[in-house]
Image (cartoon, rainbow, N blue to C red; front, side):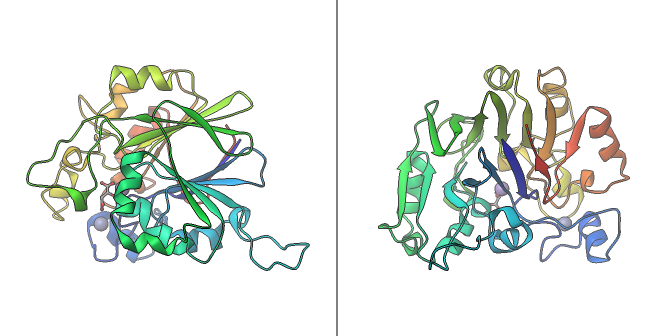
Length: 303
Ligand code: MLT
Ligand code: MN
Ligand code: ZN
């Protein structure tokens, strides 16, 4: 199995267009201790030829330009249109995971997989009709049922604690509920496994059991501290309120997963306020000393 990190940042990317927080300021000034990152997406393949895009980022076009493996290949026949991206899978309906669907609109056959509830969010929004239904089939994936969206790559979606997309939040929001609105992905090819969980409000015992024994864990690294956005002066929202448990703290992911039985562990979906983005920061040292890596765009993994 090959997995490529197309976008390692959370919604907004790094730096975010309107942000001059202390972490973004480093990127705007070209500081060499930080790397620019695009918004949340990975791609995976079992045969190197047929790729599954997991989450369609607003930065998808740039990600394809930067990643030869998923760019159109020269065709032996007369056709000039091609893409190694044969299927798309969504882990939720957030803007950073669905806006890139609009980039995929140029009459390219694809299969779009998501849970029934996430597909309903798309169906409720007519703009996604730009994906011609005669070419782009939408398939509802049931939780805990395995399917093969591209040859040789088995995929299973499972519920993780989460919430509805920000733009669907009502007066009160149920953060941490488990259902079809926020899922993690188990990938398997030839006995090797990877788990991709870009949004997760809490580490439950069920989740720990699920990831036990995996060769690769790509996990929600949105914020280091729960109130980091407030500290940075960019907003009042906590990580938890956004459906993302923090890395640090007594119930953060660092402690909750400290003794998890996983091979490589990598934080992904990193918010622009998160100091782990800075290579020589104390927070970066803390996660690295605990055995974690910090995802970068273009990172290629072979679990
Ligand atoms: C999230 O991961 O919490 C969302 O991407 C936030 C957003 O929609 O901007
Ligand atoms: Mn997001
Ligand atoms: Zn920022």
